Amino acid sequence: MHTGSKDKLLDVDSSRPATAEQRLRQLGIKLPTPPEPFGIYAEAVQTGDLLFLTGMLPTVGREAKYIGRIGAELDVQAGREAAYLAAINALAVARQHLGSLDKVTRIVRLGVLVATSGDVREQPRVADGRDSLPYSETIRNEFVGVDGRRRCSNI
Image (cartoon, rainbow, N blue to C red; front, side, top):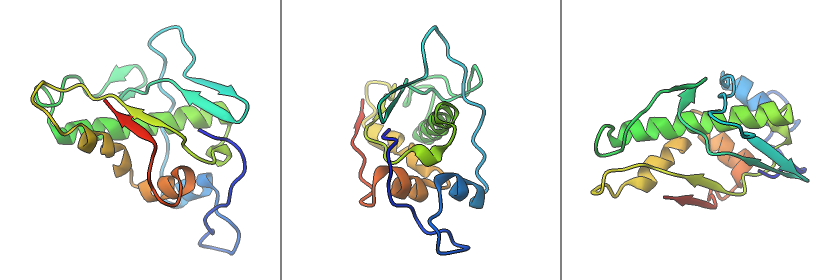
């Protein structure tokens, strides 16, 4: 994530730019407590204006909410929900590290790892579950770029 300056969307209540934190409040979105690491590692490391996050899992605290492979123990919809939860966790970690999501100007790269059985070919559809966030359009406009295209890899 890049943490420099950028233009903001307009606040619906005024002509001032809305911040990411204001948009979350306007939409009634409350980010969870950031997940606890499962090992001895930093979930976020900042160098200059760049913030790097570790891989996020679909957990609440240290409890896994989705266990299994798409096409075996889980269906595509469950995979999309897992991607959504992992994305929410990533935002929570970024906020905890930076103090505010208002400091994020763009998501530079987004990688999604999807465990599947051998016959599943819907990894991109599962990975796009992160975009099913209730405020995904806001996230794309605020952090990814107006064109809405991410630089991501789905494995």
